Length: 205
Image (cartoon, rainbow, N blue to C red; front, side, top):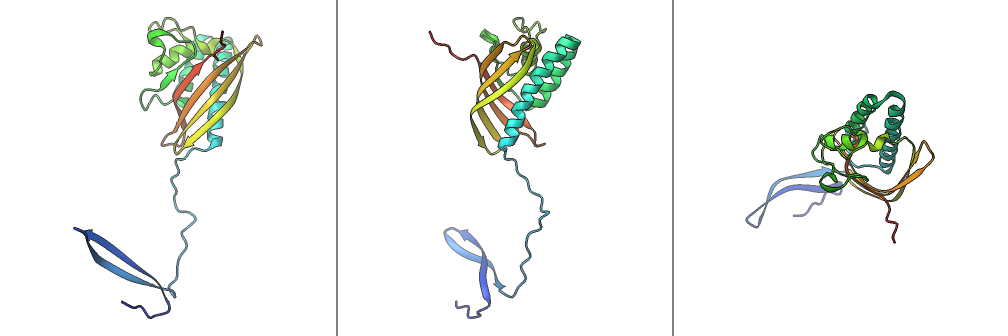
């Protein structure tokens, strides 16, 4: 077939393959004199990709929340600190989706991994007889948190980070922990922690 009209710019065809045979079911010719309308700038766009700035903001928010729980405990007592810790966990972690892969710094034995909301709350503020060894990591008088990332890996709606978290207490003592987080962006565009591993640096012999 020869298309001799010089103003023809494109030939579009919708095709179907049936048992190895090519069947043309519809064709249309676009003339160069036709008006092409640019896409509207108001077209709704769904972008679930995480940005570096969102990751850094989520890390900072975690550190600020830890300090807030500590200062609340010192000023208002355990009930207020526990209530705040519950809000922090619900806002920062992804327990509403299922188990969170949370391995805190100071846990041992059968209670090392805190895959449930109750386990996470007990680690941060203690007071749960089901977790008798927990004394409340967030109640230790923390006043400053600094995060130094070794690397960040972002892929679509998840992001993983690894580095050090440097925590300063009200007595001025500094604790450094190795920290790995993985964040997931939920349907509301909020980053949720779905993996959290924390450990004290290996000091060697």
